[in-house]
Image 1 (cartoon, rainbow, N blue to C red):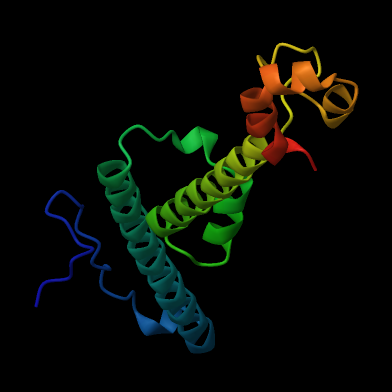
Image 2 (cartoon, one colour):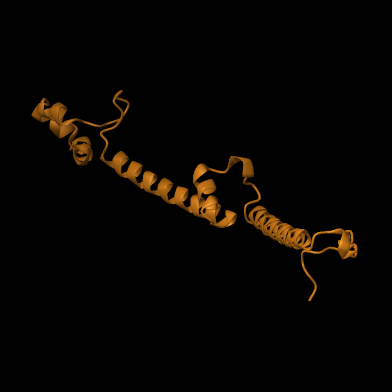
Length: 155
């Protein structure tokens, strides 16, 4: 099977034949060969990691074409550093943000329903308990419907 890390446009990296053995120390040659093999393996690992990163970036761009890599939230970057794939970390953050926005919206809706209105008095028709207590019986009869609508907002 062909090595996927090799490409056709790479120069031939075969080693030249060893020079005559009597010119070099055999122990030094062995150490140099070990270092050469280690460096080759390092290069192979680096190439493999680069290919994986490029695939991850391509997947991210396909899934989130409008997202900017330069504007990734810190939580996404920390997830990536912990080994979570980029697209998964971003999707998890988006889901988390949507869930928090939904919770905030439902809390705001509940607060609006219980609210007595604006503090500046532009809540049309709301009557406070104190206002109702100060009404005459005639005013109560006249504004009875508004009193009933105002009562659920009294805490």
